Amino acid sequence: MKIAIIGGGLAGLTAAAYLSNSPDTEGTVFERSPQIGGRAFTYEKSGFTLNYGAHAVYGIDRHTLQNMENELGLQFQSRQVDKRKVVYAKRESLTPAPLDFVNIVKTEVLTGMEKVRFITEIAAIIGHLHQLKKHRTLGEYLEHSQASQDVKELWEHLVCSNFFISPEDARQVSGEAIASYYHNLFLSGRPVSYILGSWSTITNQLRSKVEANEKWSIALKEPVESIRKENGKYILKTKTREDLEFDQVVLAMPVQQVTKLLETTPWNQAIEPYKNNTANEVLVYDIGLSKIVSRPFHYISDMDNKLFISDVSATDHTVAPSGGQLLQGIAYLNDDALSDDEKKQYLESKVQQMEKLFDTYYPGWREVTEVKRMSKKAMVSSVKNIVTNRLLPHQLPDVPLYFCGDGCEGKGELAERSFSSGRAVAKLLLSRTGTLTH
Ligand SMILES: Cc1cc2nc3c(=O)[nH]c(=O)nc-3n(C[C@H](O)[C@H](O)[C@H](O)COP(=O)(O)OP(=O)(O)OC[C@H]3O[C@@H](n4cnc5c(N)ncnc54)[C@H](O)[C@@H]3O)c2cc1C
Image (tube, rainbow, N blue to C red; front, side, top):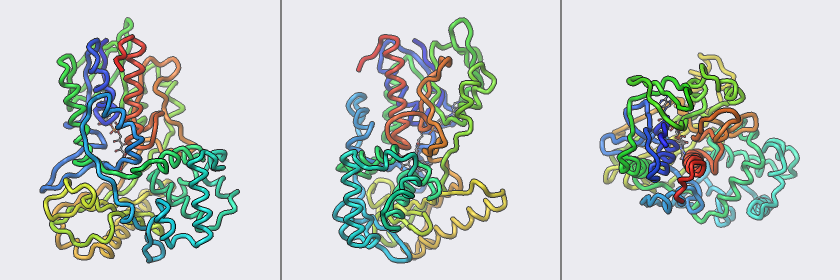
């Protein structure tokens, strides 16, 4: 079976690593950029290891990466973010983030009775008994809830930070998606960890797996421009080659790019319901400092302005040179209804809020900045997980192609959905052709 995988991000590389493990396959991963990784692309600058997208892994002990570690023999180490060093800033004061029972007791975000209420809510989530899952959205649940304003604000803020979205969008996330996400996270012994050495620790191994099979290759700087089906085969045209013939095609890219590629094909109609999906975007502000200016905590979430800063190097020491510090600021964006000029101003105001947060907790950062990187609109998830959007299934009726990526159905959120959907698509393909090895 000769397979084309379009997209060399986490999803495409995962699918390729599983498929190339089978002796009965051959194939090519087409990637339009000069490097692998997609939005999990890692690069080195002045001794700092930077990711385009961050490499925090949520609930690693229950994560798809555990399956991949066992099935593909991946080797990686991870380190947990110290929960005692995670703080929330609310109306200028700092307090432990209520992430576990110890922090809930200590936090000032909630009063005594609210803490009891919140602990009961967590217990109900763990026991699959929480009412939230019966509500269409978080907003509807909060409207019916008798909880205090602070508990409601906390729910909204948690969803905001775990789903990387604005408070307005947080209210549009389905109750079921939230209940299942937190069920998994609260049962995890390791809620937030970093893969030591960034995403490249994973992507380089996936690449080696693929290239270990001589019937497989990774074609960089080779965007696929069109696909057609002729006599039961798929014919691909890329920027540099024509008439490349395959038995199966996997589209491992954001749904926005899938719709473009399929626009002039007979499958355009089937993709129509997914065309209006919206992505979630954030402003990212990374700074690499030549020395540690301050380390009051490892993560601070500003509840009032919906920004956070991770001291990435406090957990993953490999990403900064000795004695240096790597901070990543992220602002959730909500600029849907704005004109171009207003958007510009809105983004500028976010940059200023972020710099103010750096000034407050990392004084002196400007003088020792070695590396600075800003993305004013980085796509975190190609399909925002709100009820009006629809995740793409691995296969669509009457479309003989396969789909994977963070905008597809799968376990978890963000990168986990890329891994889980890439793995699922590979298993589906192998099982259909009778070459499933796991
Ligand atoms: C700022 C930021 C922070 C994040 N933080 C986290 C986090 O802490 N934890 C987490 O789990 N996730 C995080 N994410 C999300 C995570 O990075 C993504 O979910 C994941 O990388 C998506 O992988 P993918 O393979 O699905 O898609 P992509 O990475 O988008 O891969 C698709 C690939 O397809 C290629 N492509 C597209 N069209 C074509 C074509 N026609 N021909 C050939 N190639 C093509 C693209 O170049 C790309 O390389 C973050 C993302 C961002 C941006």
